[in-house]
Image (tube, rainbow, N blue to C red; front, top):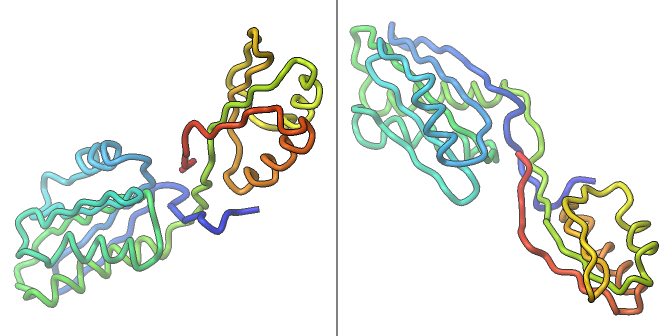
Length: 203
């Protein structure tokens, strides 16, 4: 079951080409998990022969955009608006323009950059970003079998035994956490300690 907090990203890189008054706009988009990955993609796909390589990315609450020499607000911001307008996250888009000899004006540039990015993203296959949590669970030895039964099917990262009993680090979908907390509490009579260590997102 997907979370109410789940968001969409792209399944794989995608491209789309648009021609406006002899200017060629080539949009390239890709899923990314971090701003660093987004900037690396920008450098990897920028076309040195293009007149401008404008771009934008959005990863969670982080975003950046660049007009790359076009008039301020006519390229990067419309590309970012295309990402946000389709409810996407963890996405970078680069639009390379090769000038065709006819000036488009500010409004024409906004429509061309935004349109190329928007159509590229509209066509691209999507997938869900799944919110997950990394947790630790500690309980007395007597509950070992109970806990391993509850943890069946989950990704266990580490297990340890110490004087306090059993300690396990594992991850699960954030959606599953409330029910899992309830099951642990009920089946160990409140004697297990379950802590959320980190919230993750699988892009």
